[in-house]
Image 1 (spheres, helix red, strand yellow):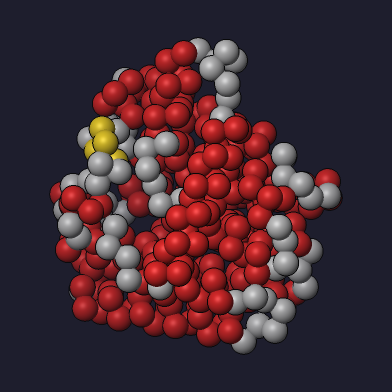
Image 2 (spheres, rainbow, N blue to C red):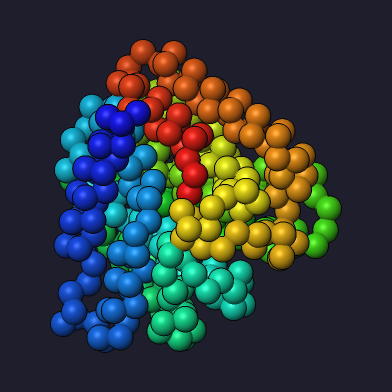
Length: 294
């Protein structure tokens, strides 16, 4: 796993360099907006979505360089969602990634605009991907659907609507699949679209991404109960204080951890069984996410 950690670190460095290139230049936007956008983008993050995009691209035989803009676009969308989620009107968080949240530094209005700017910048950046125009159209559609009302935004709305009431496991899985899973799914499917993969490979990568997406969110639920605030860079117990619907509250910590294990196993098995994928890194990624502590 040390080899995979080294691979992740190299990928993060490449993504950060690319993000620096694709973020708007200081002479093109208001100085305070420029600072607010960069503050959150370069606040530290795991870069999971770009890493997943680039790892699937590699597994499908594409060069990382061709998909770096897409990887950056995914991180921009993710960062915009975090800025907005942290606002007082939503989760009202003071810290993110060990730093004050955007609105605590720049004010609520600027934080809103920084998030909006990152969302629109994401689609401009995605269009710089070195793939045929016909593929770009489908990639834009994939990202739009994943980040919109039927995807991430709808999931956040469902998450808020579930606060303080009992939910079924089916409802909770639906919330997680949209709030967190949709953008992770897009991160895996965008390179598949770019590579023009066959139906077998597309179905396999889709099943893999759905499984690790749900496992990732359940692990977040678990860490909010049992995680180390120092490692996580934010306070724990927020889900309980907001009376949010989570897997630990629904089925308990032990069963939640077992479910993470089962989902990871499913993800690994579907990848290993697929003949045209270079699967080693995808297997390592799934296993790494299962054991993460932040």
